[in-house]
Every structure is written in C-alpha cells, then in structure tokens.
Length: 226
Image 1 (tube, rainbow, N blue to C red):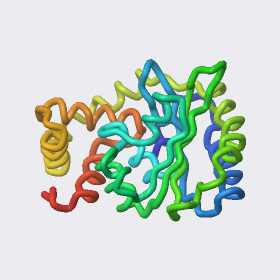
Image 2: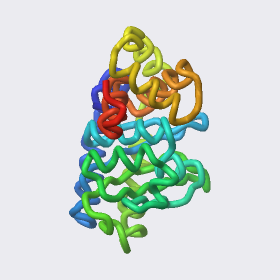
Image 3: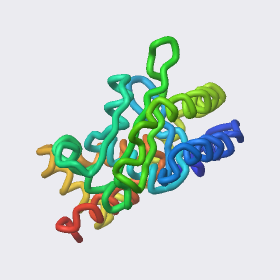
Image 4: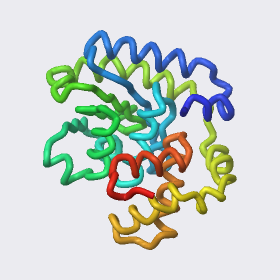
C-alpha cells in the first residue's frame, strides 16, 4: 500500500497516525465512509501521499489514468462529489466502473488550500450514494487541519518513488499489464506505448504497482479479460 512506499522515502513516521486520526474524525461525521486518501499537488500533478487502504490508492490511480473527481478537485480548487449517476459515468467512465467493483457508491474530493493555492486534496470513499450529502463543510473543516499538518511535515521525494517504480520494466511482458495497456490504448485512442506509460505513471503517483492498476482495470471491465 501507499504507506509501504512512504516508509522507504520519508523520515516522517507520523503519517500513518495522522491519516488514522483523520479517518476517525471523518467516520464520526460520516459512518459510511470506507476509506480515504490524501493527495499532494506537485508540479501540476497529484500524487497520493498516503492512503488508508490499498483499494483507495488504486482508485486514485484509475483517476490518474482517465480522470476523476480527485483530479478535477485539485485542478479546479472546487469540491467534487461523484455517485453512480449516468452523468458521472459520462465524465469518468473507467473510474465509475472501478468504484463500483470496489463497492464504493459515492466519493467526495476536497481541495485543501494554502494562501488561495491548492496544495493537496482529500479523497473520501463511501458505501452509500448520499453519505456525504449535507456534510461538505464539516468534512472540509475536519480534514483541512489534518491535511495541512501531514503535508507540512511530510518529507517525501517523488523522484525517488519514480526511480524505484521504474525498475520492474519486465511488467511490460506481463499478460495483465499487456491487456490493460491494449484496453487503455483503445479506450483513449492512443498508441500502446503511451498507454503503458500512463498506467506506470498513474501507479507511481498513487503509490501502488503497475500490476495492481492493470488488474483493477481489467476487473472493472470484465470484457477485457486475458
């Protein structure tokens, strides 16, 4: 999971307790919340800094491949909520399918601002479609202080994460990875090399392996089996 990456590249040992405390406060407000992740905006890209579960990190990765509320929230600075609605599927088809497989019925992405600039975003995943309705302000207040502290204290070098993730290039020959690459290439009308690079980049940014992203994509779209 993302915490395993952080253990290698960060001297800050309080990240896990910080995300746990944030999760505890969020569930006091929304008991149906299943998981959360915290993304850091770095040079125009969002990276998953820490997540409660591997599933949350992989859902983040799907958004990095094909778009989603987390990416939109950090890019626009606005709160983004998504449920199993046709409009959401039109916007983020792959993410909508993936969250359905993960048992997620709604998401809420909250941008965290510092001096009117988005520095990170909190992604919340819930099991009920209306779980976050009427709680946006309270959740933003609850998450904002925690997120600020985590981002301020984190000592994470993303170039180190990139170097580490670049090593297992043999995944290019893996059947799951190849199938997912072909699916993304067809879905986005891009060449296979670009599709493979997008999957690897998304995996790095989410702190999971390319194989995790590939399997999740294929499980979310069973017609693309191997």
